[in-house]
Length: 108
Length: 112
Image 1 (cartoon, chains in turn brown, red):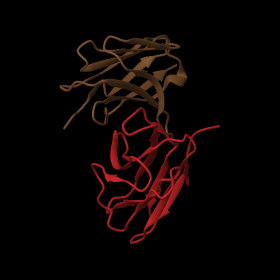
Image 2 (image 1 turned 90 degrees about the vertical axis):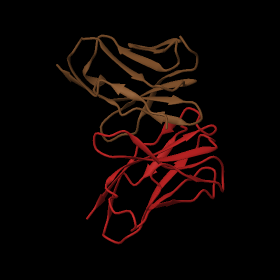
Image 3 (image 1 turned 135 degrees about the vertical axis):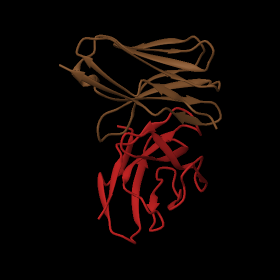
């Protein structure tokens, strides 16, 4: 079946640093979604991408729909303590498939 | 405010007991989903429903059951057949099947 490889699995950074994470697959997707999950809470939608090559921002977050339609990238600029959490990508064709998540830890 | 609610936040189950997790949405969404999340893991699909009175098994349906008698509600029952029920359970909904999903706050189930 379809699988998403999300990397890195975890990141330990200093406050103020920029963050980059990505999801890749051997399958083509027509929608990419990025969610953030705080501890003990449900995932919250950050950014939705619907077109190959699309670049969308939400505050300090920027996500891109890869031109091959097989990957997507999420960048966070100037990280702050409240960015801590788990970030999930999800790709959609016939159904929605989730990545395993990237756990972000920030040292103040 | 529109949204998805799950109750309770924490639930304890004794051996051999069935428990039911509630999920309600007032977003007027047709599709609803249940996921299981284990510590440090991603989301695994248990059951999904495209429309009222319809539901389908996901990837890990064994030991679980659902009903969809109302558009707003999609309760999940964890039966005694589920031998490892301790997990975080997430409910989600979308306008139509497999469109962008919005999640509830989750229920953490613990076995005594």
